[in-house]
Amino acid sequence: MRTRPGVKGRMGGTGWMGGIGRMLLAAIALSARTQAAHPAALAYPAPPAAPAPSSTQVSFEAAITDLTSPDAGTRLRAVQLLKPAAYPEAAVPLAPLVMDPQDDVQLAAIAAEVNIFLAEPVVTKKRVALVVEVRNAVQAEAAFSSGPYALGPRPVPAEVLTALRTAARDQNPRVAIEALYAFGVVAVQPGGVVRRDLLRVAGPDIAAFIGSSDPAMRYAAIRVLGRVFARRPKDEPIEPAVGDALITALNDNDRAVKAEAMSALGAMRYDRGVQALTDLFTYYGKGAPAEAALDALGRIANAGSVPLFTAQLAGKTAALRRSAIEGLARVGDPSQLPAIQAVIDKERESSVTLAGAFASVLLGNASTDQVSDSLARPRAREQAKRYLIEIAPGRTTTFAHQLLDSDPQIRVDVIDALGFAGDPAAISALEPLTADPDPEVARGAERAVARLRAQNPPR
Image (cartoon, rainbow, N blue to C red):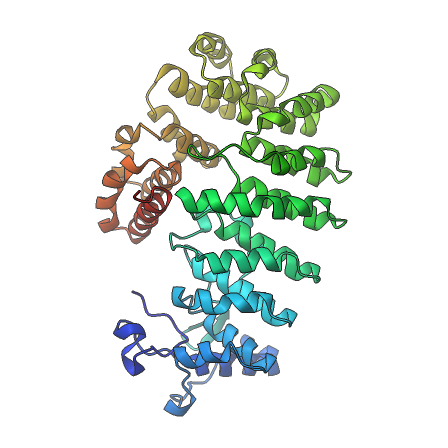
């Protein structure tokens, strides 16, 4: 385990359970008080600090004990001291403070919980040479917006998920929205029976927020539903109470909310949304709303949409042609491949040709190299990663040479895709990479293996 600044170990000076070195919470607290009193101090080199006396050191147990203090200031300081350490052992003790009566304590606890489960925990203050470098604060919405790859492999306790879901009903809109986004960050981690039970319980709760009078809350709820309920191979059908709430949101007056509802329906692959999305596409006909509707239909890939997809192979924009190809690919009818290939043969837009490569893999069992090679092109990288996650199950062995690519970023991208694809057969291919000489590759492999094991728990 790596040593983290901030907490003196549980076993005195020998570290948490004897494995982590001494942590100095008091030094962080002193730094925070000094900076609060003198904001301009950050602009100048700090003088060398004398070692803190041992009496000011705060042990892990003392910080945990302070979380239950009747004094709000003491609770807040304890949370602030635990947050940069990102100890997984602190997750459950911190959970009650997510519902603390004081807003400041709640927000700090939400940030601390998110930080524990990030792939790369944020250290908001770091001393570099003689200067204190202030980094971005931990914010749940920012973590959510960075995508599912930001989440590490640590199991998220049920107490944390419950606390965040409960805090999303807080009367303070800022607290409620941060808690909801935090739930969206960590709730994608569980797999198997735990995921099934979580979706059953959380779905109606989050869907209820779509009726909020606050457009920011409606927007957040829809984004979280789209992320957490994004379809996985072993998922049960989406409950109508959840999916139908998103269909209702297609009529929202806020354009951003409406667009996000389309995206969420596509991510869920909710068949009951097909008619409403088709109507929207027909109504708009062109522009961003029509493209968003067809994109959602392309992800749902209902067989009834095939005539629409076929017609839009000749769509006027690259986005329409790309979505049409994706939809036909996901429907799974190989007889559509010649029509797709005819479009690709004269296509000049790279996003559409990449969609054609994706279709060739799904419909014609073509080489996955056509997709994975696009990882080297910055503009195509994210699109290629999305496709790799879909085509990877059952094709793990086809990525052998990409996992040995000389570019570490290519190796990391393929590792991430295999980790999110959910196929346990990838574990044996990824385990050797946990010893990769590149530390980013090794950490990515560790995360991917842990994620696959969490998504495929032993029965």
